[in-house]
Length: 398
Ligand SMILES: [Zn+2]
Image (cartoon, rainbow, N blue to C red; front, side, top):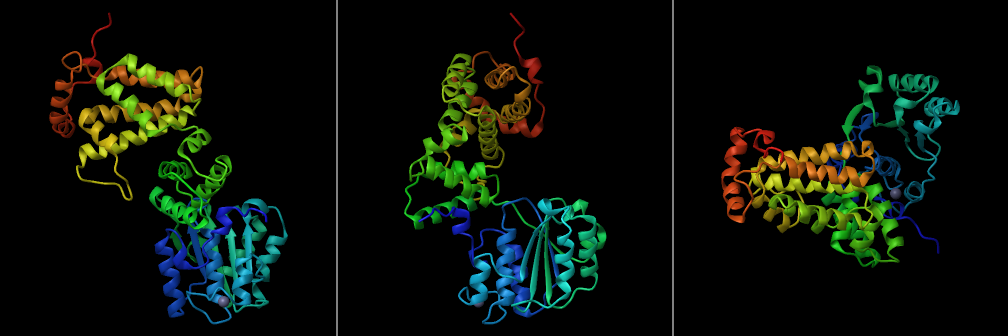
């Protein structure tokens, strides 16, 4: 039996199974149930967040042999054909890969003719702003006088490139990037159903790397399963992604909080031993600083779906909020300039040393007593914004 990739195997078949995009689901469901369908919908947003899936469920809803409903049966000939990706009245056009092809124009012009098998023809035109001029004119003409049996689902990552004539004829929805917690939940659900062992840290890392796209996340998950020989382990995922354990990020920040340059460089050397992607490491550092700052400035606030994070709690008490801001800036710029550095490790170390150098040396060495005193006074300082410039607070050279 051939291995079916998870994104395909687990593609939602009903609106209720769809992860995220509740606003779109609700609008389409209401329209289907009330029978007040718009004839053209425009989805904007990034890739891998569910456009094709929504189009397929929508096509089933309109054409299911057991009647039009937001909850198609999933069993009739129409539903199974749509699920298998071979329903003749669902026409998927990827304008990004078909721009010059003339038959796209023909396909759109054919919208005038009645559907072959269902009650409606559903057009999904992805990256619609990239259609050829001819195809675009055909689309516009059809949108101006839409035949009653045609529904358009247009999608684009770049709505600015669409003329007003198209925009004004569509009901617009922004498809949202998924939250890491939503991706984690879906991965957990799939792995449990597939009987595949996994570590929670491993899927958290994968969800972060998925960057809002469930499809990308599931394809990383496929990779991780293959890499780990059938199990998903955090160490494997890190090796695969070039990222490091949160504990390592914490050790860097502990060394910075203590102003301990030797510990900082020792830790950097240890991290370099994993041959990580230093850009990904700086991303992780920035992410940790974000979580720390949230705790400092908005006590009690917890990002949606966030787990316990004792490391961030501890560092929030040790680092001054304005240092956290500064470190964050340095991590982000350090990442941006990484390819300008002589090599990635140098760029990474220079970013860390910069954090160390700019750390205000209040009262000399940061003894634990000083550190805890600072943290108590720190929120006020951050709110007032009346703090000496870091450069002024640095000790003079030699
Ligand atoms: Zn059906």
